[in-house]
Figure 1 (cartoon, rainbow, N blue to C red):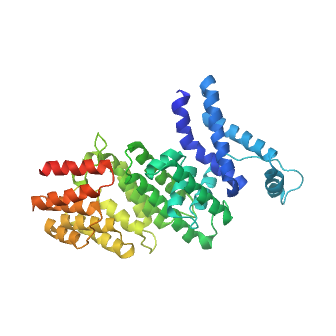
Figure 2: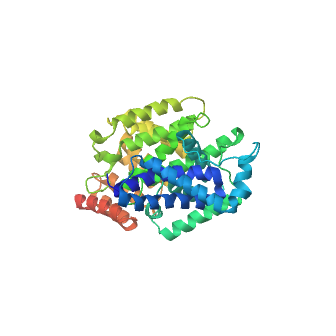
Length: 409
């Protein structure tokens, strides 16, 4: 394998590990130092491997290089004498030898602790997702900007402000105390949820990027499930929801990258293994008395993996949406409920449930009405689709709506 495809792959998988372990040693105040050392490590790899070829153990080579760079930095700067060495020597006799632990166990612990650090409620949810993508998922600034449909300058400023805020409150790279765990875990789950949605509902045309973001969210959630202190029912419910959604990932877009409506998806493209995994996580989530929003959304996602259009399917989906809207109202959930009503009780009832929402500023509102009026009133269907076209935010959405207009015309 040449170094060109190997290094981007390793950057995505190993960068986050190196940064998390170094931050555990340096503290969050020195996160830029940890990121610089990790980045320099890959720069040296690109130069060395481009001439000599990749070593037999590329990841091990990266870890050793990062260790050496970290040691050199610590010995060159006062942080070693003033902050790191005293902590290492505290409670110990004689001199201590500084060593960076890059064993699998320490890497996992460091990433989990970093997850709680970057998901601190002191910074905005948008910043939490951005930091998670950068520090824990190894995404480049341009990739993050593409995911958020903004510029690299905006992302750099956002991440800088988030790091400064976390330094202000002197955030520590450690697991929360048991008394704080549920509150802090809630912020972590929100970040993972938003991260997954950023990939699953992304407006970006890079399909690989969307899938990568979803898989990273699932990886972070898996770390929580593997840890006894964070393996809670709501964590399993979130993982179940993501498994169910991800099972239909390949059916959601066609060969040209256009989004495929649920009713037009090929169930043969649904991933049966992910559906089975989702069912197992949903069963684990049933322990205890708490029903979180993730339980409800997992229930909705589960029924969407059932191929038969039975009344039980759509009435169950409406039930879950009713419970979800009582907890967290959102226009998208309300529109999805109206669509489910149309499948359960017919298009006329679905039209009524949609129109009472009055979401005239939302292109999904008009797109749904255009779909529901199809077969009932062709002119109204076209009018609503034209309104949706005017409000659509991306070229992909506009192309999909034009297709439906052309089909009706």
